[in-house]
Image (tube, rainbow, N blue to C red; front, side, top):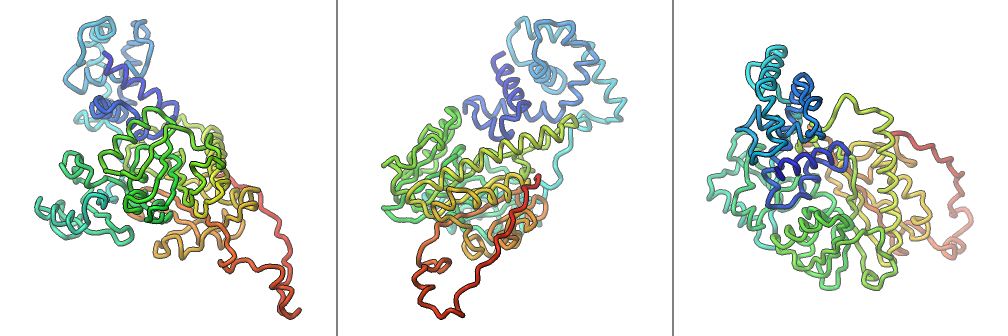
Length: 468
């Protein structure tokens, strides 16, 4: 029964909104992850149906040993929709089996009531936008080149053609170097290239943060990834650094930290130092991080931009708008604290902040507050110009959500269903330097003719924050 208890606990965590489906499942022990993942996802697909059957059969009312609705859901799922409950006889299994006839009867009634011709008709439909997102594969250049990878896929029967025109087609991405596009139906998890770490399954938008951070590839490079697990962005940073320098990868959760270490080992990221600690608890004055110049921040967020992780299965009609807004406000406060903390590192000169959220509360508003902060004023951080933040990417931020509408051009947005990616947001803060030309010294202004001195602008009144 331990397997079913683990699946029920996973559903409990998802009910408590402790992360996305992928994030929560990623923290499970690897030996059980695949089996638990399959049961959790299938149970979520049929959750409303199974809950109704359990209610009408009075299973929880009559069987006091079944105290957990989620445990009942996974057990009834396997009883009605799989090959039966895969566990040894015990009091909980017997409690469900005593109601087998009634459960089957209620299930049949519900199928008739809903006009379902098959069990599959009772499943919650998938997000249609996911069908327009290719299967993205990032080539791990720490182990081989993209040219070598392309030849390997051709030898496996793939052809250089639009993947939406041919199930075996693949193409190179136009924006992210070393990224390949495949048909959404491509199943590469069992391919030896994936198992050996030569390819990494990573959404295109998820590649943007490391690309925008642009870490140096020298032996003296010092970089921080503040929230690393499961490790896709960390391994991307390591590859961009060409395995040189030192990349400090923080992950505070113990289980996710184990996942991170396995991922980095498989990808041969030898310049990474995994650290099981909270980035916010690290002193910027710690001499170990005195030389850190580049920091990547991809903190916990609502995940509202993710459409191909089945997270739409977590949305319910009971979700209250006020509760959602309160949760977004808490997330935004945490996200802002991460940026402000990163700005305190003395040698930091480039900070990338990203989310997989579509809410302005977690995106433009967080950036706006970071620019207003004392930390930004003290350290001289400002938004990087568009030229430094994937200038060729067309979709930018929301001008109406920024203090200066022009700042929206400095940040990136990705829209699910329209950009062939999941929803994403990326911003980049850079430290002002004397050579940047953005600020001039008082002495240089004094030496100019009086008519050439810039006029003082009236201080604009800052708008009140809006909800996302």
